[in-house]
Image (cartoon, rainbow, N blue to C red; front, side, top):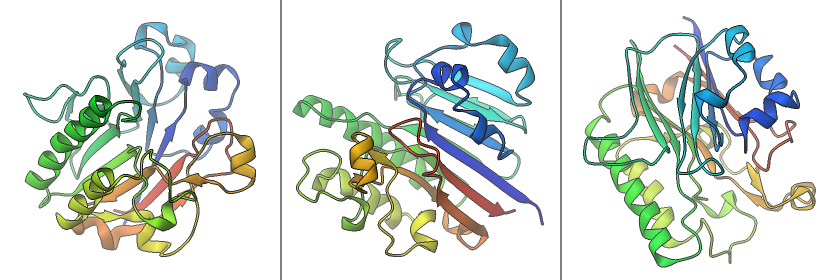
Length: 250
């Protein structure tokens, strides 16, 4: 049996992370798949020397604007199919990739923040409506859903229970539904009550452990017993989000 290692990180500008060598600790972990959200770039603007030497196949999905959104997926195994949306009727606006591999399917997700106006929240919930529909239709397959969900699910996933951001009933219900389809929060599978977060407003909040767990690996029921570890790499602190790592015995 071999291992499958996936790391996901809201990098808040991948070109900056490469330039400042903040990405090096991630590369040193030699993961099979690297998922980066909020990359704020496109393939055309990337350092081609870095891409030539990185040792991965790569797939870029630019965001709504040069300053927002965007996904980049690096993978050692070339996927059979890469889609840039959940279905033909949905427009993920640079926030979702679906990659089909021989043994499993991976959804790389970066949900909208949903803050500021009621319309923004509705856009976020509509994004998840499409994701949930795809997940429910494919819950009999080996499916991994990973990335920045911009939702804190349970009380132990957030330090401020009174926040009106990422912790509304409507948002939390999204992850309740995902679990009702048989998907498992890989981190909670092995860390039942641990108050460990992946996102902070600033360094002071990080130092005081005042944050939220917004980044997830959800795995289908068929993969739950294959989860070897799922951890938050909070020693890597060059972004407001910490990377998360999933290792499966596959």
